[in-house]
Length: 81
Image (tube, rainbow, N blue to C red; front, top):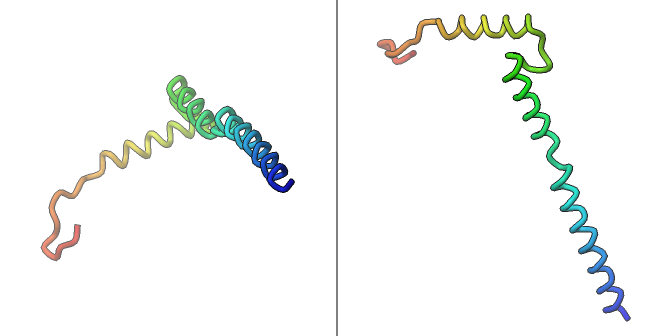
């Protein structure tokens, strides 16, 4: 009798487990889908969906200012860079 109940439990748990795995495969990676959509938006518009065009221009200007900063290629005599 107990083996019959155990067998039924294992079958039900297996069906529920397979259903859960299939649900995770179909719906479980919304973060990746959102990131892909944001990257497509960036490629089309030149800024992220959560920032305005003015914010994007300011970000680009700040990045350009950092890139044009002098780069230290040798350490000082005391070992600091």
